[in-house]
Picture 1 (cartoon, rainbow, N blue to C red):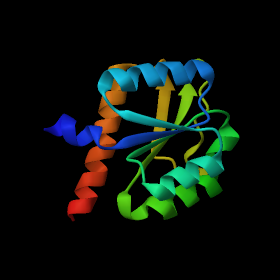
Picture 2 (picture 1 turned 135 degrees about the vertical axis):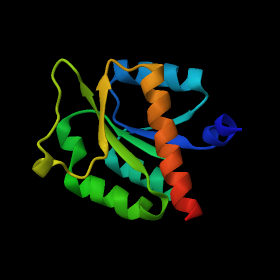
Picture 3 (picture 1 turned 135 degrees about the horizontal axis):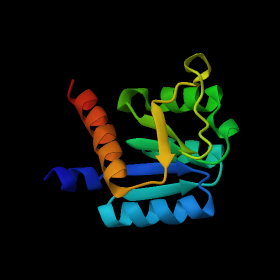
Length: 134
């Protein structure tokens, strides 16, 4: 039952690299989660306005993780408690000092695994569901 409800949610991914896209698509397909790719911040915002995702993964360069973008996402999905994470590489992490964090909930560190993605999506879904019930 938990998996059935979870599969009704989707993950929105901004500007994934071709390597990341293939890995994410493969892992989410295996986990039976829907994934929507956005090539730009505007495209991502349009999709999120139609139906807020339970999880947003910001790929690409660090400038994609701007405070303005994260605030726009937060304002759009405030009632839905969307989880927002940035995708970074363990070899050259782009982790920011806490005072420079644009409001991200965390970082998704490569290499990606199905266990980590499962845990992240379930946490995002639970956060959204618990908020909807309160």
